[in-house]
Amino acid sequence: MYVTIVYVSVKAEKVEMFKEVSRINHENSIREPGNVRFDILQSTDDPSKFVFYEAYKTLKDAAAHKETSHYLMWRDTVADWMTEPRKGVTYHGLYPIAHS
Image (cartoon, rainbow, N blue to C red):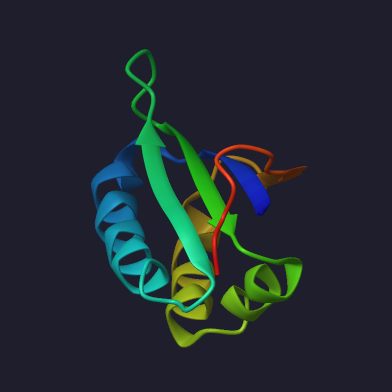
């Protein structure tokens, strides 16, 4: 399993719009053939901080996500709403084991 954890900081005045656009991205991402999980978390301490937990069966599946229209729409829409560039950290998922 190929996992990316993405850290995002959003301008306070854009938080609600960010949540809505991210929800649309989430709903489409979980329908992708290689998707295992696509969770979006909001900090309880700082509502402008978000974490995306994106798990795909393979690196190829994760790369395909970056080519989808819903991801490209999300990326382009929220780019100016962030207080700093988002940071993605990749991991090799060990457990649970993704089944084909």
